[in-house]
Image (tube, rainbow, N blue to C red; front, side, top):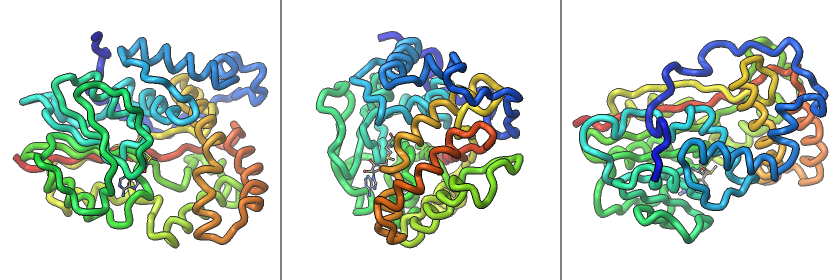
Length: 328
Ligand SMILES: C[S@@+](CC[C@H](N)C(=O)[O-])C[C@H]1O[C@@H](n2cnc3c(N)ncnc32)[C@H](O)[C@@H]1O
């Protein structure tokens, strides 16, 4: 198996910390934008672009589903092909046991297992939506991480991605992760947080996209599953006893508005990811917590999607990556 060029290293710099520069001529006419058109005009071309990217980076294929794994690709772009950013496994003994908490479709766990054949990887989720055919060093389990953890042995690395809103009690998650790590083991969390922000004020407070964000935040509070959880991970890790805690902010532009080619590409993927997934992301929050009907939501989302596609709105989704180490 060929190795990806850089499977575990953090990027050289910390992208996303500086304000992003907007493209002076963002070309709102998508038909004239050849980059956009070639990447994202259909699910088929999206899928082939990602396959090419994965092959270039030494990843195996495993049955790509564009509508569900686009987000995984955006993380690939964000970390320059790395699967995680903390120092786990880069010095000292190899990572023997790795847990992907809230594994979802299992795509991160499969890529990790493929690129770390010496590690035993466990992917765990409430929902049994993972594929049956997996690398031999990977096992999926269905379980509730809010219940007691009863793993037979500790892990060297626990990873959790896009778990904002998953748990009601994050300090307890941090404590359990701490208890289930070997001395010197690492926990890393990578998560979106809300609201979307703009550094230049182009996302007006009364814009449909801004209002959508506020509703989602409010609904998360009503349901006791805050979608702002990532803002607290750093302090919660410190409180749980982790050391060498680091927090980094990455930015996912909402569309192709930035000048920089790399952020433009991340933005194109984000736009597709969110425009396609925003109903699924919103419906439970809006109907259960805020009492909207599905029809009211659909009507509102027409304008939210317009904002998501508007290149005059220089907004981005904040992505927090936070990691810490259990003392040796
Ligand atoms: C947005 S998905 C992220 C999936 C995956 N980490 C990724 O980045 O592709 C969040 C996942 O957390 C899982 N989840 C939520 N609450 C959970 C719990 N209490 N125990 C285990 N998994 C949970 C959900 O079932 C869902 O698959």
